[in-house]
Length: 388
Image (cartoon, rainbow, N blue to C red; front, side, top):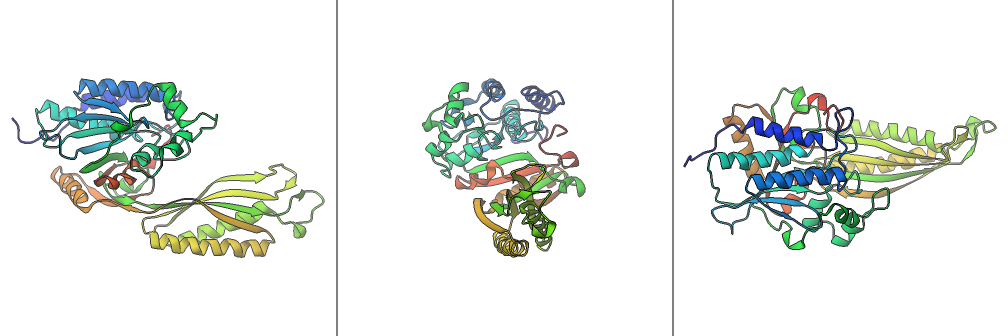
C-alpha cells in the first residue's frame, strides 16, 4: 500500500465535476442562477448524491438540508476531518463560488480511493444550505444552525420574497433530513474557495493562506428630512434627506480611509417618496463595515455614528442608527495555517497570508474543531458575476 498520496489529483475527473455543475442553473450568459432550495438546487443536490455514492461515501441529510458524504476511517470513533462549502449561488452568480470547495473535497477522497489509502479518521464532505443568503435572508444558514448560532424555529420560519418559508422549500424539493444526522463534531474543517478579491492576482501569488474572517457590522441608517414639492421649495428652505444622506456617506468614506484596512459599503438605499419632482423626506440605507480587528472596527463605528449626528444637525435633518447584524472577527487555527503553508511550500507554489472580507461557512466551524481556509485567485477579482 502506498504510504502517501500522489501530488496530483485526477484533473479530467475534477473538470467533469465542474463542467456538470456549471450546467445546473446555467444562464444564457454563462452565469449561474441556483438559489438555495430551488429546483436548480435540487438538481445539483441530486447529482452530488450520485457522485457521493460513486465515490463510496455514505450520504446523509440533516433537518436543515445540509448534505454529508462520509468516508469511513480506520477508527470510526475519531472525530472526522470535514471538507466542504456550498452549492447555492447568488442570482446570476459565478461557476466556482462555493461549489469549488465541495467538489475539491470530493476529488480528494476520490484520489484517496485511487491510491488505496485508508485514513485513520473519517472524512466528511459537506454541502451547507443557503450559504449565500440570497433567497433566505440570513447568510451561512445551514452552518450557523448546526453550530447553534440559529435555533430551528428561526431557520424554518425565514421567508423568501414570495413568502415561502425555509421549511416549505425544504419539503418542496424533498430535502428535509433528520436531526440525528447533523454534524456534531470535527477535528478539522477545511474549505477551498476563490478569493473574491484582487490580492492574490495583484501580488502574483497562487495560494492564499486565510488567517481568518473579518468582523462585520450592518447598520440601518434612517435619515428624516421634510418632503416638499421641487418647484416652489427654495434650496435654502429644503431639508433634503437624500442630499443629507449623500454628505453623510461621503464623510463615512473619508473616515474609512483614515483606518488602515477598513472597508465600508453603502449598497442599498430606499428613497421616499422616490418621485422625480419631490424633495425626498426620508432615506433609509444600510451601512456595511468590515475589518479583522474588532477593536479598530468598533472605534471606527463610534466615530461614524458621531459624524452622522453632526451632519444631520448641519443639514436640519435627523438620523437614527440601528444595528441590523454584527459578527465578530474569526481567527483560524495556527496549526492548520502552518500545515497549509508547509504543503504550499512543498508543492513549490507561491503564497501569501490574507483575511477574508466575505463571510463563509468556515466562520462557524471553529465551534466544532480546528479550522482553516485556502484561497485561490479570482481572475480580475471577479467573484459572483457571470464572468467568474
